[in-house]
Length: 270
Ligand SMILES: Nc1ncnc2c1ncn2[C@@H]1O[C@H](COP(=O)(O)OP(=O)(O)OP(=O)(O)O)[C@@H](O)[C@H]1O
Ligand SMILES: [Mg+2]
Image (tube, rainbow, N blue to C red):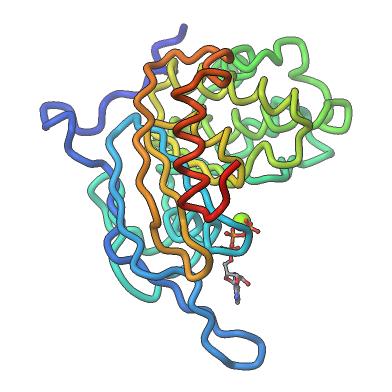
């Protein structure tokens, strides 16, 4: 694999357990159309290490997307502090990649040109080559589809393209908002395995939003279970299952106990 695919540690020479990201008492209050305050996020604090896989799990409308968008600098917080890779997040910044529920690819561009799109807006020092884009596409199993148009691909394949586009500039942190929520169950399981594989190869730090207890437990080092709106952390669940994780672990007793604990914190037990 190309050297470029492996991210250099950001905190070289520093304590490897030192957090690279930190949210401290983060709050968000929106103004409703009627002019009332909508408290979406209340006092959310957590931190993460380089390379860690974090899931934010919570009920619909609780404020997960809001937390993720604040971490990406897409919306302003109303209180608290967010620090990523040593900098205060106060607006959009280049060292982040994002994948949303819809792949949002440009239909008139080829797969390869979609992956390369961020290069057109990033500073010159971040420019990656066509060869690197091809290598990423190869890594997610899309070799041979470089010149296809997005509408010639399945939903799962389109999300793989969106993942490559998010990784093209080798970001310090990958933010994913229910990226597999619109996919069928089998494709979703496949994408979960693929994502862990990509994370293993690239050592990327991932913050992953999901509704699925099983997905959160399977993927993560740590799951933060959110309460109903306003989002606050109801439970921090450490997933002490070593990587690489096979699909079979989903049927084990320990996996199910962890799912049960997350379900309990959500107020449902399945
Ligand atoms: N721009 C906005 N203006 C006003 N209220 C908003 C705005 N964006 C989000 N909200 C409100 O904030 C709350 C949290 O929304 P958010 O999208 O973060 O939830 P979520 O947990 O991502 O939900 P879902 O799981 O359904 O995607 C909701 O009540 C929503 O209506
Ligand atoms: Mg959301």
